[in-house]
Amino acid sequence: MKRIILLIGLILLLIGSSMLWINSPYRYILESKAKLKSGKTASAIELLTEGLSRYQNNTELNLHLARAYLQLGKIEDANNLVEEKNVLVGVSLNNELLTFILELAIANQQNNNNLFAKDLASFYLKLIENKPISLQIAKELIKLSSILQDKSEVILETALDIADRYENNEVISDIKIALLPKYLTAAEDLLAKKQFDKALEILNTSEKLGKDSQVSLLKAKIFIQQGDINKSQTEFEDAIELNPNDTQIKIAYAEVLNNFSNKTTDKTRKVEYLEKASLLLNNTDTDMLKSTIKRNLEILNTKFKITDGNLSIKTQGEFSFPILTFKIVPLQEINLKTYKVIFETIGKKQIDVIESIITKSDLNNIIEVQCTVPVSNDKLVYAKLLIDGKQVQEFISNKQHGQVKI
Image (tube, rainbow, N blue to C red; front, side, top):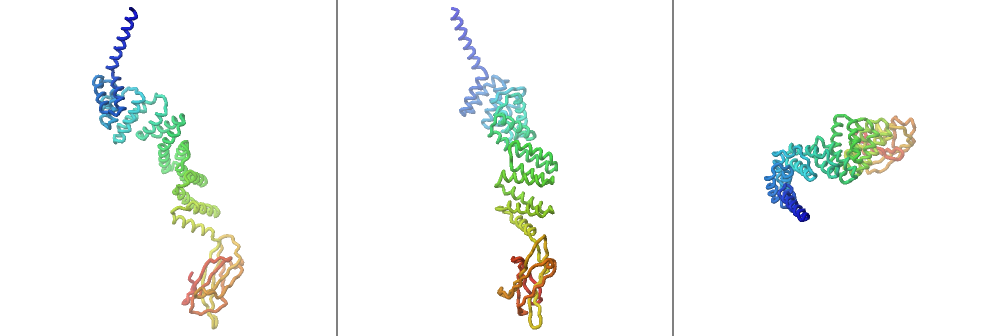
């Protein structure tokens, strides 16, 4: 008898519990989830609206209805449910509804409702303060950083710490993509203000994300401003090693090396800078810079110059003879051996060759070389000047005035 009574009591309890569950707000939530999962969003909204009419102050019903509206693309309806009833005050949400708050914040940002987006994002931050750390939170913080721009660096650094704990390279890479431009922008702003040490501090912090060519490039620019040529070169070379196909970095480095060459008085360093710049510009479309560097190298490598050159025709008695005068001016310590003058007439027909040893007394003084073969006074004559076997200049006589044309 007692067993029968106990069994009846248990049955009644189960029936009562079932009736209680059937009439509870959680039935509406569970059924709406099933409908949303199967794509029956309108039906889920109808069910949740019915539940909310019975349980008007139920926060979870309210938020699930707002979530359904968001899924349907009705952002304003979702906002109204959250705003009008002030359902977020003092609430503690499960992970599912936490994600919804973030999704609604992102949707509002995309809809240019930035103020409400920031309110929701700030609320989300407060809600997760006491939540257990998870990789999901790190992923959501990345999204959140785009809304709360003024706190984005701190948010992303927090996300990075979480991702590091889980050693998740994919999330770390996503954070780097989001965080690195912020470090670069902050450092560029400080560089513009000539706050070099602070800019370097930020860039050094950024390197915990891994080496990056743009970071090295910016550090190089800072070291240039500080006058530290060696450190700037190291950073430029790091940038090229990290991104060898970036021609803009190579061009920037070549321009800097050209400037270094112009500023230094050390000829060896000048040549070193220009030769390195010339190599960097191989296969780049920078003809003007290439020409400048090539010209500067030629000037530096020039050991002497020829001045006061003149080819004239002088009459001596019945004959006229070409006479070439010139001066060899050394530009550096040199040991020149010989000069040779080849006289030619029209058609480049060789008429005489005169060669001589160069002595110290020849340097910086006018040298006169006379052709031994007479020529017609009214014809053009050419003279080629060779130093140590290499042609350095060619002269043409003017039959009217006997003046040189080089």
